[in-house]
Image (cartoon, rainbow, N blue to C red):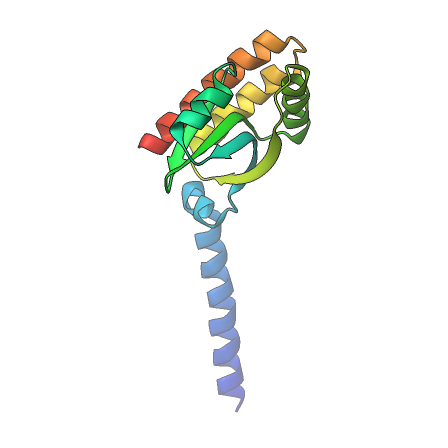
Length: 149
């Protein structure tokens, strides 16, 4: 009976040591597989059932991203990972007479996530509407390119 208990303890301690060694030496990129997707906020202007109505209603809005899905046209004004920035953008568009609402999305692309977070820093540090719009124009363009890949 003592031999069985001793063997179990040896196997248990050996398993702990091997597991600890493997965990410490694992590639960090492998751990990202289990990472929860980052949350992002889209400022969505609306959804249209026809391209003509969408173009007519949004002709004076810039920047914007239009995505077609299931014969519907979704119009996005901004994408950010920072809720305060999303509220700032929403306020700017409201000042311009454009109604919108926040929509939470998930993003998996590490490159896009890093880009948006860097652009968020720029948005945080300015209150100039034209600068914020220019930054968001780049973000929306990057998002569209990400979707094409």
